[in-house]
Image (cartoon, rainbow over all chains, first blue to last red):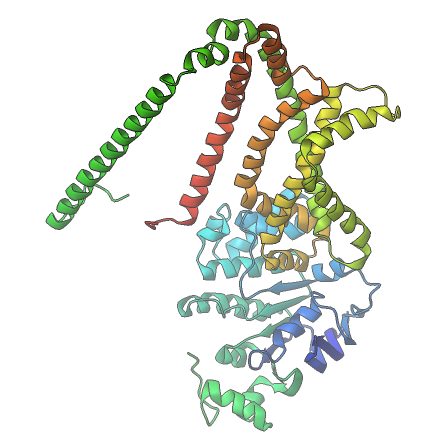
Length: 254
Length: 284
């Protein structure tokens, strides 16, 4: 078993003339929860999309375990099946029932027999309190319920890494808690998570490590308590003060 | 719908009464104006100087009865052609649409071929395709001798697939890219993503347009008569020539309308249902 689930080395990504990621180095250990923070456009989402091979790198290397997944000879579908990703807009399949959304990857990618995949999907839904919605279509569910289904769909194949891309940004404030509680639960169970988030209080509470991105480079990273309480860099301080207020010790997030 | 058992305020009772009288008046006005219009048209036509002879040569009951068996037999051929052509069009157009949405340079030749096909067959008049395929391909003496009916069906498939594939392509492109992203992120291959996630949603989006194309094809199957197939149109032509009376054409035309009506109604119903579902609770 490898020590590191994910390792990035000098990862660069350009869109046209804009450099969105300007050489990112990052290592994520097993069972670790890493929060990516930073303003919109700082490269958080692009970083996650590069890791899940939804974007092609312009330079640098990414390893998942011991496998260099930036090597073009690696089959991307195999890699993606080992990484779960949850999006801001849920992206559930509207024409499939909740249970089919969850069981789809097990059935089609892992080739698990249908009855077995469905039973596992139902157990997962039960765990997040949505077993009674298994036969519904996604648009009958609230935003928070849909996002919980999306999380469950992402972990249905037992991925070794879970990526969360601002999963509460599209939710009404009163629905955020139910989604974050689920993430908290997953992290307590030892799921390795990398999440881009604007929920500073949550990041501070749940993440082992916080990475502050600005302009496509890592400005500061460290234990979450350290980064939030004693940011070393001026840019980090400026960013955090917008959320937490000057002094940096407040805890409330609107 | 609100439950009628709830107590209703006097204001609402007044509004409902007002709406009811307004509705009744609107219905009456439109009914009367339609009737008046129809009667005026009828009287005008019947009083034209040539009406007597037109009635004899276009609406003659005896000729219609005499032509009936032959035209019905012909219509059965139209229905058969329609059946096989529909299946052919569905299969071919989905393939073409899928090819046209493939990305990446390695697919360029296939994509270009598909684009050229839709350009060519959307531009070519159906009747010319019918002649070229119906008389040209058998002339190659490459295939075993197939009937004109067979090649007519092929010509219809070629022409209509070009249109229908564009409808499917529009549907495929109307499925939000994030759906594809979500599917691929689960590890589904491009083909699986297309089959399981994109196409089912695309088909739903374009069903009304597809049904409309089906109605269009339903009457265009009559054009295979130019290849000498004795379908309903050809049968009507033969009967007309035999009796110097155009009634068989009118009869065949009416039968085509009857054939199309269920599909037209189904299309209207489905479109209305879609609209109702998407605009729940709004007035406009």
